[in-house]
Length: 327
Image (cartoon, rainbow, N blue to C red; front, side, top):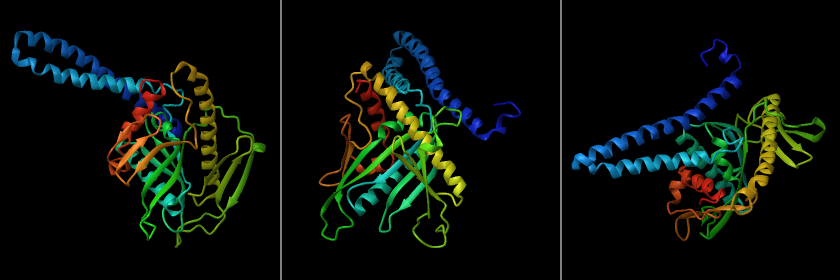
């Protein structure tokens, strides 16, 4: 990084900086744990001679145990693509306007989680619904182990609440689908043939006003062999939208390959069959009582609003333990 030409290639430089952050995320607590173990041994020796120091030992043991637990969690992020950035896509599903509103609530939740972890966020695509919320959105979440932490969020998220869009105040169940793929650099070999891709150009939609794009610059790409569809309309330039859509398609194909690899490794774990895209993975309740429960791990948080404020790390950690049979 100290080299004079380090920043000449911005994308490669950012990739190196990301690798450094990932390494520091492991090495710093590891070094702290090793120092803490030495300090604890010294403290125990001193406590044998000074009873006043004995009261400090349990607190130091608890601190080290927490540190080791966190390191063990990081050791579970061992997939080849786990260190990568993530591309997270949210689509409103069943539930009418409530589902559109729910999709936007999830977008805010993941954005808040990313900000709490000092991750960078880039909005790749957003399609607003005419009444409320969004039809879909895609964001890039960039930071150490972003994909490793977020990949377990793929699936259907179900909300049960009294609908703010229903004048009769009835309970409404709505669904939003989340899909997470690793962001891959151009250096990663992904087989992508032009004849396998159908490209559709359309006019970008928006909420109205002066910022609506009047030209057909939005791009939708369909990968015919897999049926994967990606789209981007966030940029004014058709060229930029195509480049972003291609990056999203490469990421989705990389995830397909990763899932094949995980399926082959599944026999080593005592986990249930992998929960794929389209499966209900988490239930969020605002009525009759507040709670959020993961359908796979059984992990439960009783504060709905705290979870929607981005406090989802405990769910992510519980999934990491669950998938290797340690939950």
